[in-house]
Image (cartoon, rainbow over the protein chains, first blue to last red):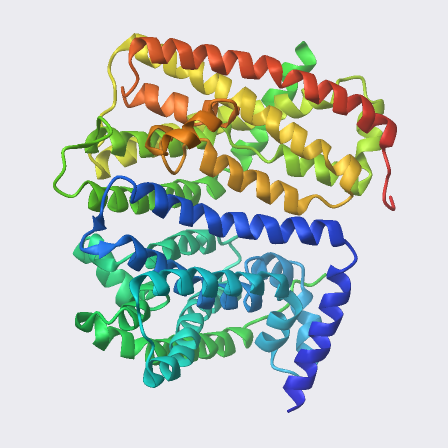
Length: 261
Length: 263
């Protein structure tokens, strides 16, 4: 209960600071929309030249993309830890965090959240709804009940991977540019994994399981029976990876010595 | 002129000092090339060509488009915005050089660094992983080099325009991001312009964006006829001249408007 109230207070402060530069906020919304539109344009243009992608139709690919946006925006809104190493370890901000009686990871996340990105989830729902309507997909009650654990599972997969990468900073001083690398691999999860070769498919399923963010759960809603097992694994993978990440974080934070300035 | 050469040299050396950051950069670009390679492979399927472009040409196109991006891409829009926000622009303006020209030269130093230590080794690695076809004709390489020089000029001019908006907007982070997306879509980096529907291509003809990525990549992947090639190069030249005009006009107003926040 206490953490919920801490969270709400952080959010209130955050909104106040963002409203300082309103014109920029509006342009940021527009640029987010454009960025999401970019991928949609790609899909539309490509399907002007082909009717299917390895057996997946245009609307199915659009559905996957729309669905993907929902866990993805949840992730970027709440786990904005790109500069964790520079900001918290090199600059010693973590000293301040550690003196407070709330879990360190929770504080870092709250300090760095970017709530305005949540708008992308609405875009995701619209894109997904548009595709679902064209595909005549009917959602049964079980489908809708599974939607939430699937979305949260995907978000936790992303969060787990990136919290683990951020934790590398506890062990190594080297400026890690591994984060943008993995971030770009995440884009592979927006398309059906069967267009990739076996090695990439294996990585996307078990090593950096980005396929659980977009493609596997979408396949469930698209009633593609051959992928059901993977789809059901989504929440499991999310909990597994995020649990592992917290473990790594907690081990790492004990090694933190401060930068001394 | 000497002082500008010195600016190029210093930026080049500065980049060299931080070169380790760039090794992962190459991997990131290869990851991106890979993503589009597999997508296009699935799109081509059993077909030999799409719009007269073969799969090998397409792979070459994607590879060179990203590697050329490493050369023309720079952050001077953000640098100008930071100078304005920190108030550094006030001291920059009284120094004995042209501020915008200095920014252009810094970008060039950065670009030269990247073409030798990023694009060149990157392209070699890409050629080992993906089935690309690197041209051997010297005249093609000449046209390509001319073309990416124009790409650099046009992209940098657009960056300067975006950067100058910080004189009027105070916080232009959103605009900078929007511009980046716009260039990635409409320059031909992710989709070759000739694959867009015709009505869209007609609009793009009147915009400078396709001169940034589409033209050099088409030249390199031998997808242009000789006539198209010359035509595209002329268009690049025209755009690099046209864009000087808005920059000069806005620059005059921007200097009058300098507002230093804090400082």
